[in-house]
Length: 112
Image (tube, rainbow, N blue to C red; front, top):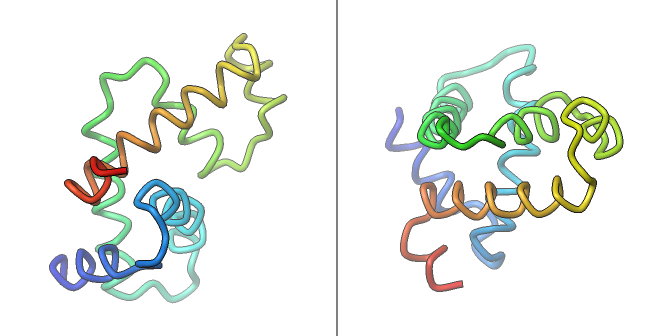
């Protein structure tokens, strides 16, 4: 099932850059996780995304992904929670999504 999920991830929005596809996946994550009838393929996609995020667990700002994509917090709210400037939050979000896109899409993301 995980191979099928990997194919879905690789084939998702192929006309877009890997960064945008990763951003799309992260936005989709919450809906997949909250699905009323979660079937094996979405569960495998969630597992792959979770594994990619776990690979970045040593990053001091990885919680930004959780706040932005999974909890739906605004940049203003995150700024209050973390005491980070809003521009800093945007910068780290972009960096983290880029790193996740490299994990998920490999060479394709590196070429961008």
